[in-house]
Length: 246
Image (cartoon, rainbow, N blue to C red):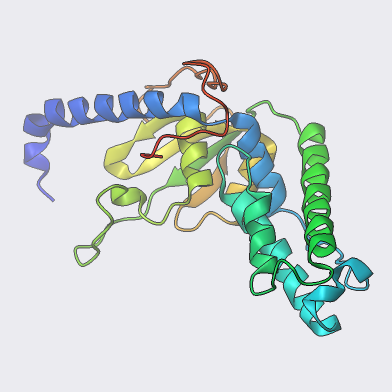
């Protein structure tokens, strides 16, 4: 709006860009690239065939009740796995939702819960097979355009103009970012084909499109990939533990 202020603002904007890159570099080690592949694979899965006739699920009710419950189980697991940036899910959580409202001392409760856990485990195994078959190398250039914040929009302060971007997409941005023009809200990523395909097919609120390999970066400030931090790097705390802030 005020181009004559560009020279005056340049040093301040440069400092902000460097700060953003520092923040990205601090976040990147906590994102598992394999987990991003897993999220992309789960998002691309078709709805699995449900064992509605399995007698183990008889305690859920009639055939219609079983179908409704298992459909909710499948969609709940897929939603959680697809939005995660580390590939982890909480099977006990989605299974607990399936068994909600059924007394634990009811006949067939344990059998239904065990069958549901095995069903979720089979979906996870299918996903691992898909990830193993995918090329993990970041070969696809992706142009990402961030949404413009309108004056009437009040984004959550912790997300700013990345408001409404899920954890998986944030993980992709901090892991595969190679160049950023924050002033024009344009980012360049180099991501694995499986991850890029998900960005192209369902990237709201971001606009994503493929770029040719010879595309020139916006400002040349590419970063070097950071190694993913594995459990036990900082201390010997059990893997299942997480601080209250997380």
